[in-house]
Image (cartoon, rainbow, N blue to C red; front, side, top):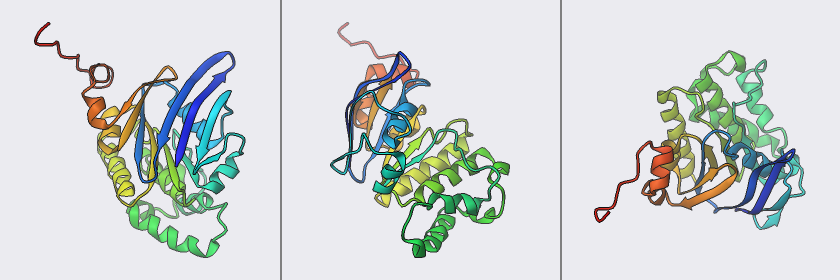
Length: 242
């Protein structure tokens, strides 16, 4: 569904993503794991069209979209849930959700999709008339995900959905991602929390200083000494013959 080849981007003279290759098949949850400032959010912004690439290719459904605007990419089925949630603080929960569907032509289906979001996120249903800015960070993150889903995406980009949230809320977000995956949603997940990301992912890529340094299944990456040391705080085991 989504294929990136040789993707490179700069901020000024600084190269922040370097020659990245990444593949997301339909129905997969693919994790992009890395520390802060690794280039994860920039990669997501490049895919969404919010940042211009220096070079490379982004294909969606087999179609080259590098020159497409953000609205064009949304129209194709790409929806970004941005880092930091970025809800419309002065608008209500309901208004935020309706904004997620602003580009849709099937206006007669929006009410049914709102009902589905309130069923998936009962706390949003309870707070539908509440201003988004007055809710907790976890509730705002749920709203941001639901707003992204209101766009009816073919591929959902989740950028640091657990950043700054309490462990119990991280578990809720993880469960939500798992539920979406079971329903067939294609997801690209950018996360610092490698343990959570590898729990929900089909495959994963490790990004370090803008360079993809490893990729594979969660099991393969968990067994990698480098990944263990960098993201799980455990040193690689010495060989028995060392």
